Image 1 (tube, rainbow, N blue to C red):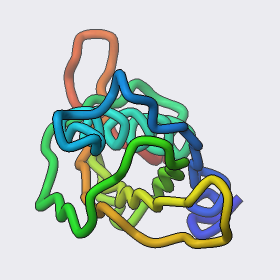
Image 2: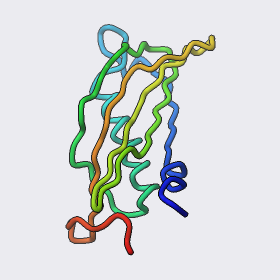
Image 3: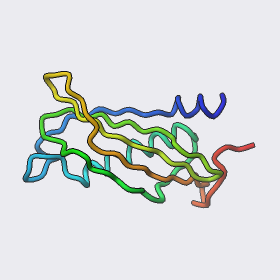
Image 4: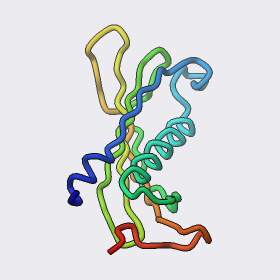
Length: 129
């Protein structure tokens, strides 16, 4: 399988309902909860791509473009956007879907960097020769 096919195979999509226990006093999803979900999706995508132990080493700019209201469905999509020798980047986007209409809009975008590690927590090559 070539790199492009691996990137496509690793794309990860998760759907969640936004319930009141995940929202703040404005009835919108907590920013920290959104970031936790994004990191989880990014971790899954990184692991699916590499099939190795992966750890988050950084998150780049996270843009909160729209508030995510309680009572909506969100889709998180994680895609590999960069591949280095021991690290890779995953872009995660969150889309809001209204439950009872076809309305869908992008709410949050961020990028997460992961490093492949061995059993001693030392960096290793992602693509072994």
